[in-house]
Length: 195
Image 1 (cartoon, rainbow, N blue to C red):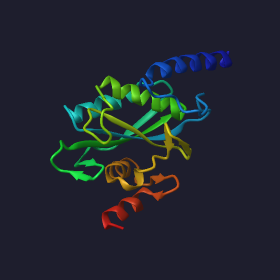
Image 2: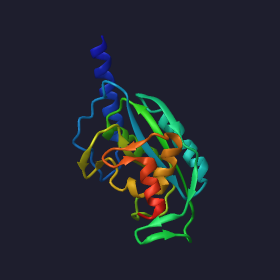
Image 3: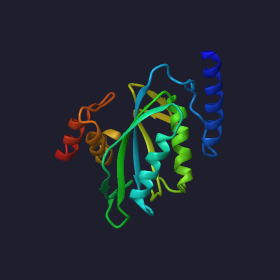
């Protein structure tokens, strides 16, 4: 009976993810089956167009409704200057940023596909790299998992140098560690010291 339920859940998740992956993108080649034990995933949320605080709240509610998600803990919302490839852009609309710790059995690429679907539901258009956006959901870490697949980089390769990720993460989890980089508190302190 349990094997049948597991197979049915896997079938439903596969259908959801296949339809959730944005056009032109493909699923990473990792195993999409649900994890045996829940894993803590770190999701960064950002928005700088429209009702940013409302969009962040709606995205958190959508993440809480995902299948195989047991718990979602969320930081306060922080306001930050928009970041462009050539540095901060104080003339652009400010970003609302938060971090959610998501306890889930969803495989990382399934979770990422569902996060992309939530972005699309909120009008996310991927027209410009580092451009303004209604909603940005980044999978920063998934337990201790590591992936160098171009569609699923784990942990997020630039998280350690982004205070708009580290500060909210530290807010929700003061003991947080970024796999391969160390304590989030130390990483944030190094950024603030300019080292």
